[in-house]
Length: 97
Image 1 (tube, rainbow, N blue to C red):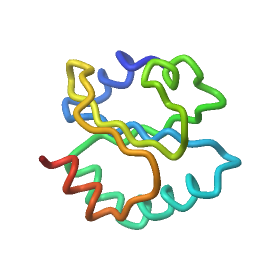
Image 2 (image 1 turned 90 degrees about the vertical axis):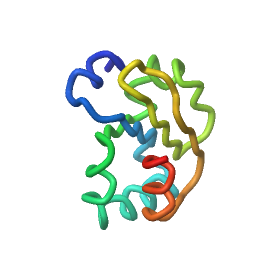
Image 3 (image 1 turned 135 degrees about the horizontal axis):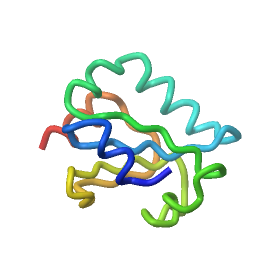
C-alpha cells in the first residue's frame, strides 16, 4: 500500500488510522470511529492501515506506537498526527482546522 494510491481514491484530506489486530486500544479507537464514521468521512477519507501488513508506509510516517492517526493533504503533507485513543468530536475538530 502506497500513499499515492490512497490519495487517488479521493479529493479530500486523508486520515490514516494505523493499527494492529492484536492491539486493544486500536480496537477501541476503531469502535469509537465506527460509531460515528459519517462525521469523520464527511471531512476526510478514512484509510485503515495494519502496521504488521504494511510496514513500508508505517515506516514512512514514523509510526512507533499504535493506534496512531495521521491526517495528510492531497500533496501528501502531514497536517496532524496523534497517537492514542480520542473521541470522534476531538478527531473531527482536528481534521476540520
